[in-house]
Length: 395
Image 1 (tube, helix red, strand yellow):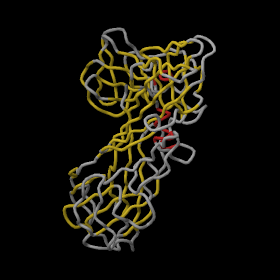
Image 2 (tube, rainbow, N blue to C red):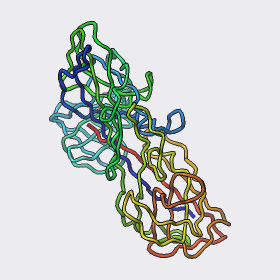
Image 3 (cartoon, helix red, strand yellow):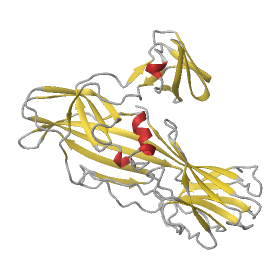
Image 4 (tube, rainbow, N blue to C red):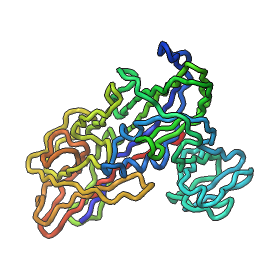
């Protein structure tokens, strides 16, 4: 038997603000307008492919670099319209064209009506194959250059974080985690105008995100660049969602309600470093959910980020196994496998996944509460597939 459950969707959006600073006094001479930046494919992949097999959001942009390049992060379709039928996108009118697969594969198309598709191959100048398959009426669109891995013309890497609350910190409000770092660059010894800023996991790694500054920062001798980066990550479902029966599954097929019960992001402390405390129930990374449970508990799911009912009585907890990550999927499945001799009951009502040891406590991060009892017997094994996905706001 197999049961597939989408667990959580995380959506990230980065905001950049630059400042001109007096090198002697440290006083801000001018704040520039905030603007969103573009999170790149490499940064998204690193959630599942970092040095420890997965990195938290706070680890993906430790380093900042400034440059003088102007290569755009997106291209407007202008007068051209795009339509999608199945996996094929067709361009009509105007002057916008596709280039070739080597140039365009991996870029994201976003319509004015909010649909998105990733380019896989280019057939000719007006046709491309994309994913996912969908139907989108002809309309205005933007192509985001999410394949960029370096700044166009890098010049300087930050020297230090500006520490202290308000400069480097983090918080969770409702279902939104806010992570912030402030980067100070060295004092200029010559005049320079910065036009681009990028963020990296570590110096030399591929870009997490990049922005072309709408208002370039012009500095003279004795002045310095300051960059503030705020990453907001929204998690869902933070309220109960009704789900229909995922069957037909032998002895295990019923509708119910699913909900995240809490979020405990690894944060950023006032020194700019990762906050090592990760509460039970964290969905910071696709690898943090290391144990699953199934239980006869029918207790209602409490509100998001509040104490949850204890479901330990007669429950069965088993380690979850992360599956191989495919680049650009931006999701990772974790399998929890109950053998023929595990969890054999006729009154199972809840299941879920969380962070910690083999004891499932009231802090479990995700719960699926069924409307009717489920049964498992010793004639079957049961594999529950939990999917953790993450995305970005294209901007």
